[in-house]
Structures are given as structure tokens and as C-alpha cells.
Length: 274
Image (cartoon, rainbow, N blue to C red; front, side):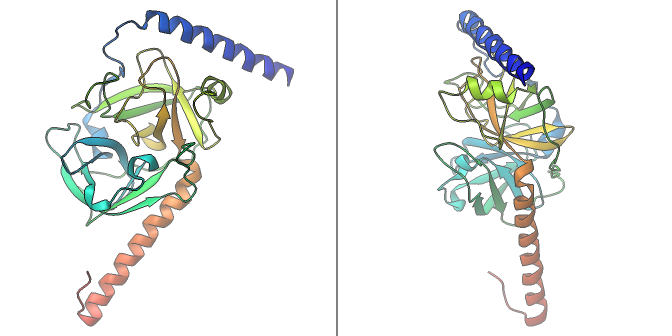
């Protein structure tokens, strides 16, 4: 136990020293997010949630023919008819397919103040075209410190900038949970349903990246939730997917069963299903 405590204290001290040094050299860095242009394959499951004017608001991950997983704070209180889901492209300005939204499912345990259980599922009208997208599998892997993961997003490249027209990808590592709890103690509590990532100053998430997928081995492990924008030397905090896989799968299963039931009613009675 003493050895563990010493390791935690050492990690905290090292992190504080690193952050202090990083802020000294930050200056007028114009490219905050860092990373690189995302390969085309990421566009197969990465979704862009937009308002009626076409402005990108948040990211999401396609997990079935009908569903996108995103952050609850992205869609809380929103009317489904005012949200459009764009899929199948790594560009905001061209390509892909636009889908209308039929329902928004916010996790019952979501807390707006603490961002605890910050996860939601968006259901589209119709189905995603297989020519444009392929749902990503959800990973039940228990993330540990040092695990390599990838964040993709259309978020801004600087604090007051616009969304990136090109989907970006950033390779990061899972950060120490204990150190992250300490580092973010004056912002929000980092709970067990969250995990943190960190690389270096000038790399991380920014406005517009919320709800975007965090992947490991091409499987979904998290959703971008919150942080101190933008890439200013603090960890990014994400919602873990693992605790919510059962809930997400039930939504998918119930939707599928409802579609089958409606189809049978049309076939047997000839009634029109609205």
C-alpha cells in the first residue's frame, strides 16, 4: 500500500510540474488539437450531429443500422426534428449522407452538473445506407493506464476557432485515474464511469469534439465528454462504454423488435404504420 501511495504522489507531482512547464511554453500556439487527418475508414462509423443550419455540433459513433452513440450533454433537451446526423464522410463540406432523427435516448442516470453517465443514443428514421457506413463494435475491454486509444473528431483546432472541415484523428494513451482525479479536482469529479487521456501540450480535444468516439483496436471504448479546452495541458475526460453496453444493446434490440412487429402488422392486416 505504501508503495502504491508513493507512486500516486510521485505521478501527481510529475504531472503538476509538467503542466506548469507546458503553460510557460504555450504562448500563441495556433494549432491546439494536433493529430492528423483521419483515414477514410474512420468516416464509416464517425457521425456528425448538426443543427438545421448544417452547423456541426457534436460527434457520435454508429453502432447499428439505426443508432448513434453520443454524449448526453450534446442532445439533452433537444427536439429530434432539429437534429441531423451526417455519416459516411471525413469531410464536413462534402460527401456522406444526411439522416433525420426519430428519437433521442438519454441515459436515466445522466447528471448535467457532474457530467456523470454522459451518454445518449440517437435513433434515425429509416436505416443507415451500408454504402456509406459500417457500425463499430463496442469493446468490453477494461481500460488500464497506458493503453493506446484513438480519438476522432471535427472539433475546433483552436479555442475560438470553427470546426475542422476535415475529420482529425489523435493517438493518445489512457492516463492514470488517480492522477486525473487530482488534476481535475477543481473542475468536476472524475468518476469510475469515466477515463482520461493525455499526451502533451497542444494535443487533445476541443469544442465540437464532444460525443466523438474513442476507439481501441477498431472498437468503441469511450465517448468524448468534458475537459478544460483546448489541449492546454490537462487531461481529456471521456465516458466509458463498457458500463453502458447492456443498455445500448437493449435499445437496439427493442427497436429491431418494434420494426419486426410493425412489419408483421402491415403484412397481416394491410394497415399503414405511421
